[in-house]
Image (cartoon, rainbow over all chains, first blue to last red; front, side, top):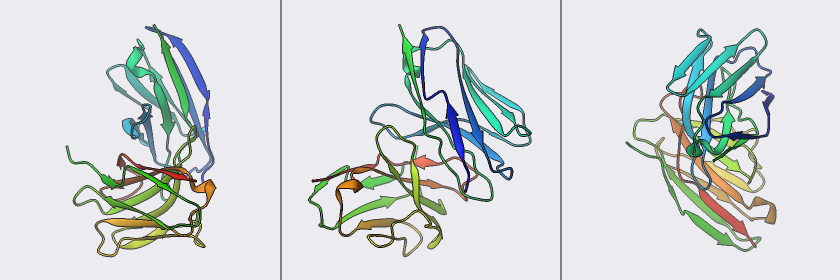
Length: 110
Length: 114
């Protein structure tokens, strides 16, 4: 199965600063690379995704970059706000099953 | 926006009892997933259905867990007998066709086994 690792496991940033989370995967057949956000006590929700034929995708303050050769992709959050405080999960998938990373807890300090 | 429905929201049971969770995916979604999430960890896939067929149940503890999606729409996950280590959040999710696309999650069932 797919081995998925996320780093860091926790991240504390000052409001307005940027946050970057990296996800490393093992299955070279993976072709879909999403990031989910889970606020405390709520369900995971997709915030951004990218496919293997694209290197970068942006949506307002969030972006995802993909390096298929190195088998990792990253979530970038700019101008962080208190509402960005949550747990973020990567979940690379392909022909085989989708596997979630262990999560990164992001805390935005006011 | 359509949502994945799950019930009950909370379940407290004693060990050795039977429990059942229900999930109704978004209408038209062919793929349905049951995940278990322990606090502080990522969701772990228990079973994946494509329509009414199981496509992946490799992580399902089949001696005590069972899942069905008889008509390819709603689904039931059962645990019998429940053990203390089964305490967790059980999340249902659905997607239109398969795992290489957006998953829509339900609110989950928080199970406590005493």
